[in-house]
Structure formats: C-alpha cells, structure tokens
Length: 505
Ligand SMILES: NC(=O)c1ccc[n+]([C@@H]2O[C@H](COP(=O)([O-])OP(=O)(O)OC[C@H]3O[C@@H](n4cnc5c(N)ncnc54)[C@H](O)[C@@H]3O)[C@@H](O)[C@H]2O)c1
Image 1: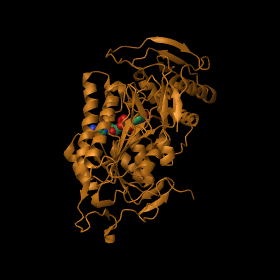
Image 2: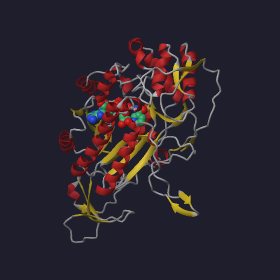
Image 3: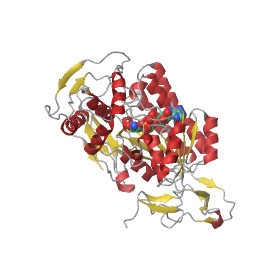
Image 4: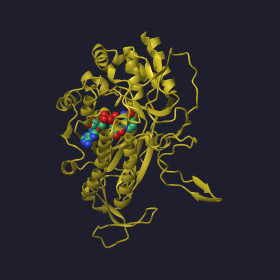
C-alpha cells in the first residue's frame, strides 16, 4: 500500500493532544509555556485526551502508529472525530455532513437559514427541492444511518455558539457559514453591510470563542479564489503566502518575500469580507496559537457525491438566481430551459473551478491532516481553470449533442467591474502534493449528470417558475437595470480568444 499523506504527522498535529512543557519552535521566536506541573521545565510533553492512562509522553507518535487513527481512502482518520460544520444547511455544508457522517465522523452543525432567507428575498428558490432541516435530519438518519447534532444558531449570537462548542468540543470546525454572494453584496448599502457584518463579525466572534473553548481544534475556513483577483501582470496566484524563494527587487536592492501574505485584490464587498477574514484568522493563529487552513476555493459546480445520489430526498440545494447562481450551475439551468447562456462582457475572464465531489474530497483530506498549533496555512482548492466563454461552449455542445437541446449563447454588458481579458496563473500544489488529492470528476461528465438531473420534470418546472431571476439587474455602480445585449451566437461559431490559463499543480 502507498504511504498515506498524513502517516508521518504526529501528536503535534493531533487535536486530541494536550501540549505541556516549554515550547519554542516557531520561526518568529515567540515562546509559549504549557504548564505540565513537571520538574523538567524544558521538556515538551503531551497528554492524550483520548488515552489519559498513558500519562505524559513525547509528542512524536505518528498517525500511522497511533491506534486512534485508522487507515481509510482519505488517509488516516481519527476514530469518531468530532467535526462541527458551520452553515450545515447550505450547498456545501449539507453535502459534507453526509459524506463525513457516512465515513463515521461525529457530525454537529449550526445554521440560521440565512441562505434560504436571502434566496426568498430575491423571489427565487432552490431548483432542486430541499426539505426543512428537521425533515432533512430525519431523512439522513433513516436512509444513511447518520445522526447529526444540529442547532439553529446565528453565528453572530456568541453566547449560543459558545454553549454549543462547549457541549460538542469539536476536533475540527469547518466554517462555511457566510453569505457567499458578490452581487448580493453590491446590491446596495444595506446588503453590503449585511454581508460584511455577517461574515467578518461572525468569524471574528468565532475566533475568540475557539481560543477560550477549543484552542486545539483545527479551523477550516472557507475563503475564495476571488480574494486574489486576477493580476494583469500575470503574477502567479501563490497559495496565500509567498514561497520561500520569492524575492522583491526595488531600487537596486533585494529582499525575500518568503512566508509573507501575497497581495489580495478582492472583486466585490463580499470578496473583501473574505480578505478581512483571512487577516483575522492569521492574526488569531499568531496571537493564540490557534491552527487553521484557509481555503481559497474555486467556483463549485455539480450535483454529485455518492451520498447525495442515494435518494432524491438527500440532495443538496441548487440556486440559479442572479445572487446565488454560480456560473456553471446557472449555465446548465439556462441550457435545459431554453434561455441563451449569458456571458458577461467578452467572456474571456478565466476562473478556477472544482466539482462538488472533488471539493468534498479535499475537505476530508484537510480535516484528517491538521496543522500544528499556531500554524496558519493556505491552500488553493481548484481542479481546473476555464474561460467563461469556453465553459458556455462546452455546456452548449453537450446539451445539443447528447440531449438534443437547442442551446444558444448570448453576450451581455458586464455588470461587474473586472477585466474581461487577463492572464491567469494559479498555483495549486499543496492539495495534490501534500494531501494526496487527485481530482476524480471530469467537467464534461459532471455537466452531463447535471443536465440529466435538471431535466427531471419537477426540477424543470421549478426552473421555469424562477427563470426571470437569472439575469443580472445589479451593476457594480449600484444601478438597477437590465444589461444591454451585445451579441447572440450559435455555439461552435466562435474561436476561443484571449490568454491561455496556466495551472501549476
Ligand atoms: N459555492 C461556491 O462556489 C463557493 C466558492 C468559493 C467559496 N465558497 C465559500 O464556501 C462557503 C459555503 O458556500 P455554499 O455555496 O455552501 O454557500 P451556502 O450559502 O449554501 O452555505 C452557507 C450556509 O451558511 C449559513 N449561514 C450564513 N450566515 C450564517 C450565520 N450568521 N449563522 C449561521 N449560519 C449562517 C447559510 O444559511 C447557509 O446555509 C461560503 O463561505 C462561501 O463563501 C463557496
């Protein structure tokens, strides 16, 4: 058997380990004392919360050696690991809960149904119907045998969040609980404030609670590739921090940039909220020795994971409206319902994408391979880079050839402020090289699967009912109006223009 990606990780990484003794291993030289009540003050020892009978010992047992960690297809997994999912009712939260539950993790989660409320505010609905949470929990229990400890809690309600964390003592926390929409955050002052307050203040409060209640937990925080923007110079988008050999030259002098955070150039007030989160999480790791992976996630598409496919009642939500419909999901809905796929501007914008199932694979691999105390790390979670116009072509081609649809493509005025045509080089080395991630979902295959699901009679009807919510009516200048049509064309009649993406894995 090949060595697992986390087999050499040790108690240093394990959330069950309680560090004691004098610890001074950080590059910045800040020491921290963990009082063990021992004589040998210099010695670093741990106590295992899961096996207190072992007493104090050196924190060098590897996951491979430890009986609490069991081999699986995702690496060694901590037995019955307690994972709390914030935003568990959402597109990704629900999907991850089922997947982790099926693997034997103990799942808890909170949500305050913000996403449901925002979609309703837009006058839209999820085109894949989902039940109320109480019913979803019952269905997960009945069909998959998964018990989820759920609370309806707003992340801004610090005392309730604290109580829940004290009760569960999660060994990992996946933080999906934010409002994930650029156009929503650009609609007007009220929406911009709502997004920033919900996301930034929610995360900041959470950090203080983690520090007090579960400082050993790993916070897996969702950022977005949109934090970086798309630098016109073509500078590679490194994984959050500059690599050790990066150098800046100025005025005939040189300095190392290694380990410094890379520039962020957010593209909406939503993305700016994620950038602020990034700095708050980084600081918390520095001040309090919290540990975190900050995930710069590409745009997610798709409907498939093994668990979601078991029964229609287990499926996750799928939105197509202007505020919450991500581009591939929206294009597929347009294709099945006979609306031309709407490209904003030139359509030569390049973005990073990842299929739902692959994103879940990455999450599990990160959860079972926690950073060390005080370690803040960033991964770019992306499995392919595509130009928007190329995606429209791919979806139209599959729709027309395999499903006999009549898909057209339309370019409209770009409501956003973004470069229509730009180079993009994305570095995404850590997940494949250090966490054993291999993408399993092919873009075309997932598009086919999505079309099949969206062509189901009930879902097609639900798309038809809400198709008026798809087209953008909000410009980044704050105007409310329809966007001008620039061009309508048949797929296969345009050559792909502009820069070629560079994907560095
Ligand atoms: N879906 C994507 O393409 C994508 C891409 C990059 C990053 N992300 C990030 O991943 C995360 C999850 O995305 P998603 O697509 O599942 O979004 P989602 O809106 O479906 O899920 C987020 C969940 O969090 C809940 N929530 C929001 N604010 C809350 C609060 N204050 N208290 C409690 N619950 C709250 C919502 O009700 C929702 O159920 C988000 O942080 C998003 O920014 C998503």
